[in-house]
Image (tube, rainbow, N blue to C red; front, side):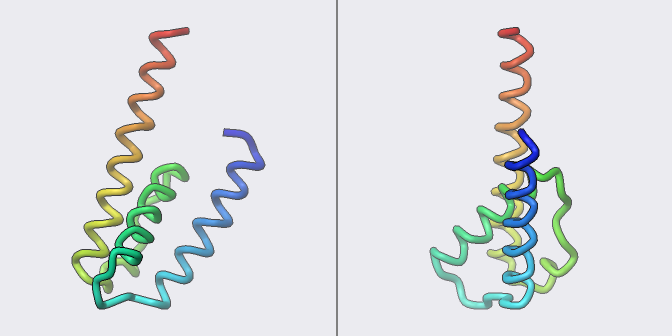
Length: 87
């Protein structure tokens, strides 16, 4: 990833983290679940840990973040292994 992409990802992650930390959506909605899932994906791409404030969110939100992060980590590892094999 180039510096511009990393910087953009970091800004996006920071903004989304701040928004979600303040919101703490308690009612499930598909839109909220997708947002938390995408937050997990961003965490994986930034090699960031799950933030402490997430423990105050509903179980479904924590699950969405964990699932998004796990899926992204799996894909990142898979693509790195593929790159090693093909180079």
